[in-house]
Length: 502
Image (cartoon, rainbow, N blue to C red):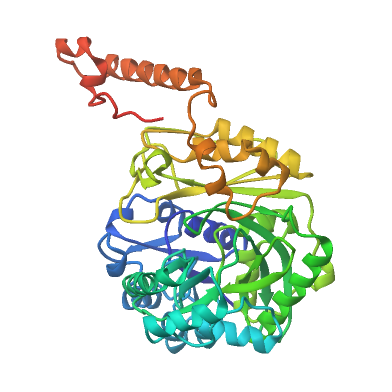
């Protein structure tokens, strides 16, 4: 029986996993870098240990250090969360060698589905539709040009390993293939250490829809329906919802059956996601499989009423699935917004810094997965995501209203976030109607960039006034301050023009 779990991750996902462990009576061990010493996941865990400097390659990506901590703390299992080592087959294999349960799929499954070329071949064998393209790696720019001519333009050149939009380039004509081939290979090599690329027909403005699957050690596989993930910037998701407002019940059933067939064909064990592209006519094609928990898993949990982390742990502990396909129902509607420390006005540049004041949304149907707290400094070393805001309601229109209210209540003062940008997304008519696809951000770029006339500036003024009042109270209740500070309270506290961003 699993009694103690090391969570090989940080931030909000580490806390998310630990919460389920606490409910199950399982003790937790946190690992942290020197930059994360005051992180919330460190404070939440039963035990914690530093594993190195801020750089991920010397801490969260260092397999030897994590295994060493796991053995010294005598854990039964390791949960990798998402990102970092979550899809690292060598890490999963090392856990098995050390007699530690890896809460995730088998190493051979990771290898089969982590390599997109191999994954395409597996899906063809499973009878799952795939986008027309190559079945082998490209060896040269000349070969890429020849194959692209056969497939027809536009095409997309993609890295075989990795994800997150890296190592992907679109070529709209023959002249663009060679430079795009070299650019994709170069980025793939620098990001994933593997420059292997392949080519697919580029489906313009599709829907990005994924299906959550669960599989146990006894061959049982089910799906937990769909998530619409088409609001993306640079191939990275910003807003997700479940169920998708686009697909029909017939298509939903067909995609669910295909997702189960895909997972069953590779003997999948644990929680995973089959991602599809759906064109304007409703035809769907396999995109890739994520052999881990997804960032957007909470929307599935909200509409299905199932704790996916608990299911991961039960499956890893050798239990059969406790649900049959007919037991799973979608109830109501859930939406998730990713809250990030980034500046939408500066091409989403990361904006780390100290959180001076934090006001989190509350009320019926609101769930917040976050590692932030007042006084916490968002580090520069990692992904800028602060947390995830999830709402649930009985209908999609009510969920949108609830998300609008929750984003209005959410205040993070001291650094720039994308909260205002998310508010604008929710208010775009195309989003409200549910008739958007992956071109949504580009199509609405001008509208989303607008600031004047959209937001009542009185809110910003009120926030600034409140913070000035806080500074004045702080001054009056602290040690003696020089007389000249009265000329500019902003200067006294290092808040020159432009330093305070709402």
